[in-house]
Length: 354
Ligand SMILES: *Cc1c(COP(=O)(O)O)cnc(C)c1O
View 1: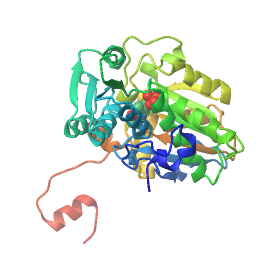
View 2: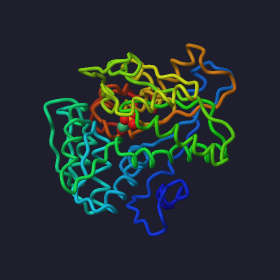
View 3: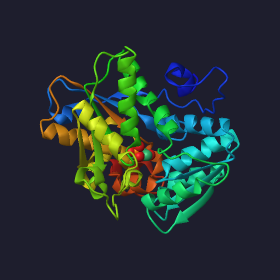
């Protein structure tokens, strides 16, 4: 199976010769989540999880990166550059390596999850940590991107948003040619909610679906610029992928909300952690904390009676849990003890009768 550009070629403005840089991204599973549905207490609710952690670098960023890097390469760039909370840098470094471009990465110091950092390092990017946050890193990138031969591959690059629209196409295809009634998604820089909404609208315009979902986006409470209506100078949340105080696609997120009749709200870190634990221990799905904001948002919206009975809901799980082993160990409920290799002793500990 080829990547997202090839599969949805008619939705991209490219000719037959356009050279595509791909790692066969996309085609991620849409997994039904009965335990989540039942926990909402909304009668007849069907919940599906779009598990983007199964992309080549473990997050949805690959859908946009394939197109942004293909375009950069086609236009003769020698370098790609991005600011990142982690996943954009992992994706850029992978596609940069694939395209034989030099990848330059600007990170907020000490706030990038271990798995993401290890990816960028092994893919061979040049990495600079700044003594500042993501928003400051992006400000730096906007300027460095003016250098000769350098292409910016953050979601301020419209090709990123174009590529990410394919997430919406896949959801509709997987639901049998239907849009969900509600679409729940984490919001950080707000590129993804913007992209999904454009994707649903494009599929609707093309006659592939007959209705549009209501878009429900969730920021983390300590980084909730859109909800609070102003930039957050020092954004905080343990969900580092959405630790962003001045979303670049702010207007796109508001348009998605307003045009669809949806909502942008926020969830606390406690709510995020509870959803993260629930996903793993009750559905068997290991996502990263930021991803769980969509499910935390669903629980919150259902408790506010915002979700109608018998509806179909999709929640995007944006990244793989393996990205952030520190938080998994911190919030995992299992206990590990060390014992000698003595079956009787181990059986007693585990409550088994031999
Ligand atoms: C990038 C990212 C987000 C936020 O997406 P935006 O497009 O910046 O809103 C959420 N979760 C994960 C895992 C991410 O990597």
